[in-house]
Length: 360
Image 1 (cartoon, helix red, strand yellow):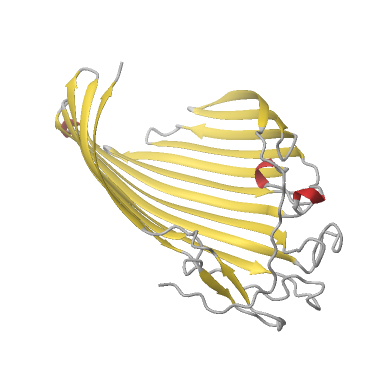
Image 2: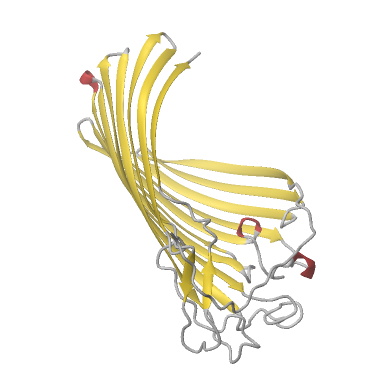
């Protein structure tokens, strides 16, 4: 049984807003021009330009305009290899007004999905077939998003993902085996402010500038490692097929906080160095399945299968009362975060299913 001990509340604020939620309507127009140049030796250069204009009604931004430039090279100069490398640079402009005081938001805050954004991305993929009946595919993508007009909210995001995939086929025996491993990594830098309406940190009345001791930043890091496999076997060619599959994924997340410590609690709403969250959205996911499929007649397939799923979750907030200990220069209170039990719990699922599918 979880027990919440005595806690001294430093500041507790709730904001009541009478605004009703409204539907967001939008229209979008996309124009793309692409040119392919034959370089010879089974190689090509592809250049593309894309323009997208979105107009919103009741949206955070009234208009988004995105211009993206893409360049790629692909080659099959060697019979045993296919290689493609591409890059993209995109600029998204946003007509996003400052928030009014009645909305209860920081006026210079921008929601990332509607904010101005600069995006750069590189993708490299190669498939190697130098071993008989075996294909090896390596895929890597790396990108960076920057939000130049967002004084608060998501500032930038770095991401990368690498996958190695191996497929082995024995055509005469109707056997295909596939294995893969993937690693993904994400780093998000966010900026915000802790403030009370009409008091310390209030951007409309007390702290009307962008810079203020009540500001804080958060760097959220997530690393995801996944391995998986699948085996398909034709027990009776074109009639009875079996499939065995499974995957395991481990996610490790953390959040590192930082904040300038003000001289007094009268000019800094978070007058302490905030404690980091060593475990955020860390999880382990395991799934496995076995199925049999029988071709009843042309176009009709009956399947019977079993699937197992297990998800284990770890988070610094799982105890419902995660302590935020007082750090140096903070002598006027104790800070804690009560999550109200909203963090998901572990689960385990066994599924048995039967289905009939038809192709026309």
